[in-house]
Image (cartoon, rainbow over all chains, first blue to last red; front, top):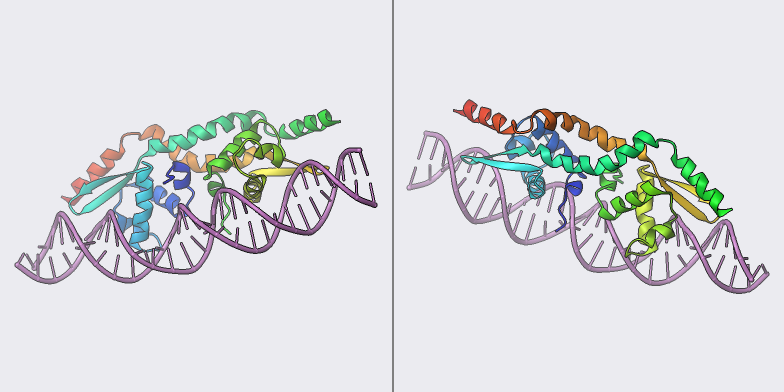
Length: 106
Length: 106
DNA sequence: TATATTTGCAACCAGTTGGTTTCATAAGCA
DNA sequence: TGCTTATGAAACCAACTGGTTGCAAATATA
């Protein structure tokens, strides 16, 4: 099963869960109260987030507190960083690249 | 049809296409040569990338050059930035948050 | 003009996704 | 010891995804 962080953050509900957990650790029930879906659906999202290690569990009696593994988000940041350099320097130079190709063809 | 940038970058093939286009503008045929899929499959990916404005087309005769809209990647960067602050400062303080909750329950 | 090339689009298909309902398990509580 | 609560897992389902093949349109080339 393909389970990487990019797929995990692709879903808007999961991004919302991430936003909630960034504030504080929460139980599945507490999280579900913030959405218009069933608790079970949230549970499935939490499973996906856990599988790619974006979230970790901490059992406490019969409750399970989920918290965000912020470090994991760095993976996205690392991927982005290769392009960040480009958009900081190149910005509108892509048109130049295209022009160059056009000239080469002539 | 849901078509946002997070969904666009979720697919590994599309991320690879993005990486290629970051180097230079390319035609669908040229892009497809780098993958083990048909040109049509690449064409569908390009359609998705175009729809969420991560990529732009430039017709040139019967060829179409696709190039990367780097600025669009900033949207991911913006989303990340709210968490970047946290992982820079909080790092391992999530355990503290959890401890606090535990104490409150007692 | 006839032919080849480049491309997008439609139709189809198997696998995945996100949701639901139902159920089992384990922990707290009367 | 029952009853309630919190949770995960399984079965099912409609919609979406990523892939394919086949085709039509437009441009280049002989």
